[in-house]
Length: 108
Image 1 (tube, one colour):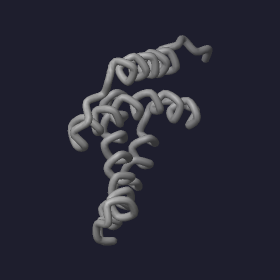
Image 2 (image 1 turned 120 degrees about the horizontal axis):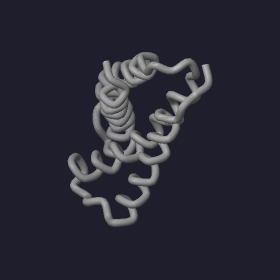
Image 3 (image 1 turned 30 degrees about the vertical axis):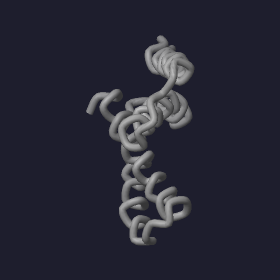
């Protein structure tokens, strides 16, 4: 699976899992929301192990940029709050940083 697709799926899993906890603790939803939340968080962690890199820290660091952009998309699509231009600028910077981390030429 391509790294970009893995990161998008990981972001959906992480945000969905975290939102399940948010829904229970902040929105008063049933504790049963935690069951799919835990499953999604496990899927998120597993997905990050599929990234082709020798260093976990590099996979996690690059994923951070994707997570930020995906979180803003979640805010827009699920929560109905449109990101402003500062959100867009910040997400663009983060994605650029992730691209540098992933695409940089590495020795050996």
